[in-house]
Structures are given as C-alpha cells and as structure tokens.
Image 1 (cartoon, rainbow, N blue to C red):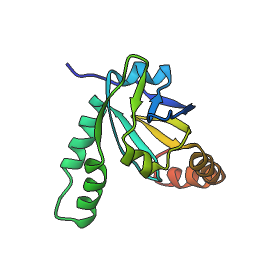
Image 2 (cartoon, one colour; image 1 turned 180 degrees about the vertical axis):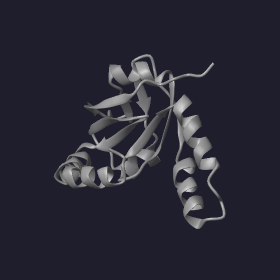
Image 3 (cartoon, helix red, strand yellow; image 1 turned 90 degrees about the vertical axis):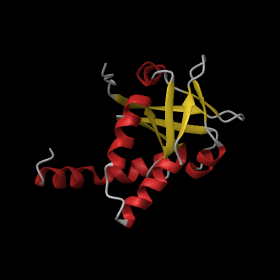
Image 4 (cartoon, rainbow, N blue to C red; image 1 turned 120 degrees about the vertical axis):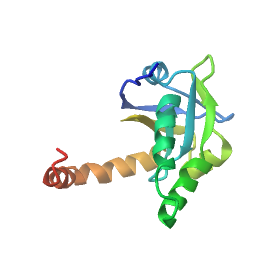
Length: 150
C-alpha cells in the first residue's frame, strides 16, 4: 500500500529543552507519523522527513552517479548525518547533539514546513534568512517564470 503524505506547510516557533527534546506542532505530528528521519540540511538547518518521504529521497540519492565527486559528497553529507527518531507520546523528538551543533540550535527553534519535509532552524538564523529571501522574492519568481516553473 502506497502511503501518501499530506503537504507539510506553516511556520512554528517552539523551544528546545535542556534534554534536547523538541515538541512538534500538532499539525506536523499528524502528518509525520510515529517515526521520522532527521539529517543535516542546507543553509544551516536540519531536514526532518516522514519515513515514507525519506525512503523516496534516499532512493533518488542512491540513483545518482557515484562517479561524480559532488554527488558522493552530497550523499555523504545527507546520508551520514541521518538518524531515525521516534516521536514520543508527548509529540517530541530528541535532537542528537551533533545535529543540534550543526544547526546551531539553542532554546528558540523554528519549524518550517516545506512541502515534503520540515526544516528545523535556529530562530535567529531563520529570521535573517527569511528577511534576505523576502527581499529577493520578486526576482526569484521572475527567474522561475523564465524557465516555466511558475
């Protein structure tokens, strides 16, 4: 049976407690299931995938040519950093220390739904990134329009 994940969207600010537990928004919990994969992401955030989506993503990475150095490096970056994490009965995940350090997570964390995954950001890094991207939105839309993506 094919499991279809709903779209993960929205932006939520939550706290990372002293035991590195992060409470997930109720909306995300429903769509993520009981177990997720968390890994290093781009732009200094973490990527969190529902298991079904992670399997699709890992398969796409597996199908890339390992003859190219960039492909090998990207696969190592994403796959070696990945960890399966259970969502506990209180709707929290435990963020491993190495991933917490990679993303510079502290007490305030932003969870941003980006269609097939949730990105986990340090709040200050997210605010700076979002401000920069908002200023470029029109130009990005124009470029996407030129290639027929919009």
